[in-house]
Image (cartoon, rainbow, N blue to C red; front, side, top):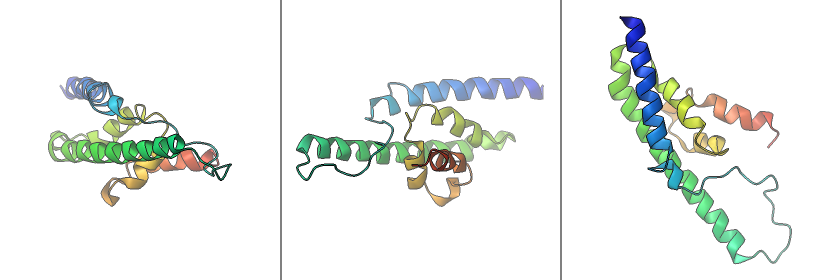
Length: 128
């Protein structure tokens, strides 16, 4: 019986992360990996570069708020079945953050830091 509950939970998490990370929420945000060279090379930075950076930062902030809400819902409602589903949800959603998971992790509340610790460590390992 426990195995069937676990399989059901995994299937539901997969459905939720597909809907949440798909075109409904995260898919509509301008998420992308951070640029390798964060410094501006010329003193005449175009306004489109600055607007693109601003749009990207806004998208990362909105993604962090959405992820925080999803974690809150999971911890309040799904973890009550006796299975720690929030970490599984974190891994499902991480795949949909298009390389900006470390920035999203930095913006999350302290209570989620243990769950998303790997997100920030991956960025440090890359030397960024």
